[in-house]
Amino acid sequence: MVQIAASTYVIVIAGVIVFQICLISGVPWGHLTQGGSNEGALPAAGRIGAGVSILLLGCMGAAITSAAGMAPGWPFWTAWVAVGIQVLSVILNWITPSAAERRLWGPVTTLMLVLAVYVVMAA
Image 1 (cartoon, rainbow, N blue to C red):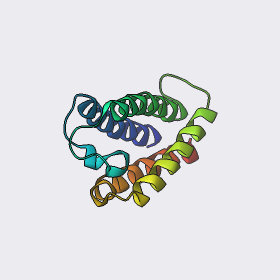
Image 2 (image 1 turned 45 degrees about the horizontal axis):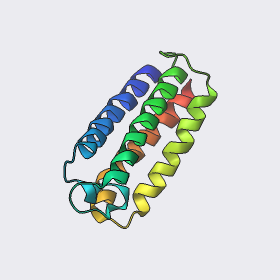
Image 3 (image 1 turned 45 degrees about the vertical axis):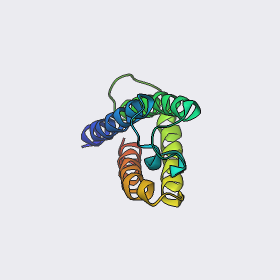
Image 4 (image 1 turned 135 degrees about the vertical axis):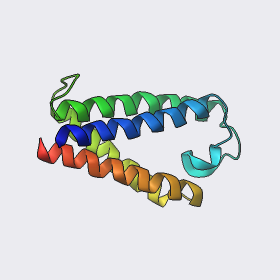
């Protein structure tokens, strides 16, 4: 069950990464990210932020799969770091001034947190 939860976490992360790639590519979803302050496509700084998010998300996925006994086999403490970052993400996505961002990312990041905590606690 732990590996299923970790795999599900990574699948959700893959979807978020696709969203970030779309932002970098200029898709006009600025109202759905980074506080919703950008209507339309993100400016260059926002696109750089999306790129950083991709790297962070990849590391978080690797940490959680590692905690579940899967590749890449990172130390267990990295999963706790991923959970901490996930908690911060949940808080930020539920308190954002953008209603659209709250509706989309609040539930998604909460699901990700539940999966990550389950993996870390059950491993």
